[in-house]
Length: 338
Picture (cartoon, rainbow, N blue to C red):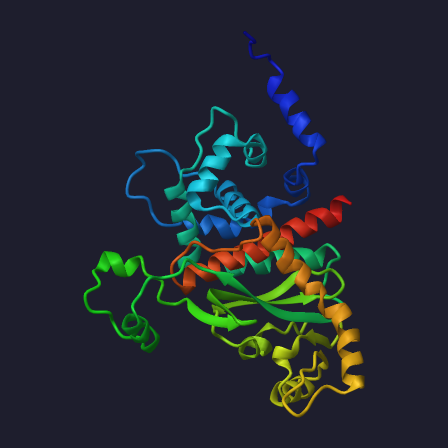
């Protein structure tokens, strides 16, 4: 029988570090205290009593949401993983003797961020930090969107029809209605049906940080949120995008705003692409493809199956916003630790 040694924990963490735990760099390179002033608004509600346990530290709770986003974990899963993984405990500055927030606590904390519209503020706060640290948006921007799957709803055709028209479904109890996502939508892409939401992002070409984002249901066409994604603070007026943004109206709008468009062209019936347009698409794709790396990284960390486990657009916005912020945090840590 073996016995625990005084330094067993340190030895185990040293073995983990040999495999280059990415959370070490993330913890070291990001000044998490920069977010405290925004996060403390979560607990601003006056407590009815001083009895009971003190609430968990807001920065630690925020870091839990970052872990969720990086590893695509549910509230129950992140509670278990913090209990189970030494690397997660170290990232959160927890010891074996410390109390780990349960799944309900994590849900409530994120819900308060939603109620106070703090996710976007946290995203903007870090974008300002990037700029102050020499990572201002440069060399133009790339705009694209990715579908984020949501759990499919088992509704009848009549129920779906009423949902789309905004009608109340008779026969649904309040409890059942709370469990139904009436904001997510279906969309067909490449002959495959998808159900969920869209993550629309604008990425700067030089550093590949997400500079702006918008979240919609999956049926919203990419071009409908194009203008609101554009970053006027980028050092260049060049804009890259795929053929979903290639309408004459969209190209004209870009020109009127003083942008130089690099939008992929799309052939149409009886109007195939010319050799010059084909070559232009090939040239533009070399830059535009960089945005796919971001979606690829987010999907890869989720095991290739990016899913949000929330109900409603407001919660989807928060979850996807946190995912974009977590990507930026992780990329920044890699930049400054290289």
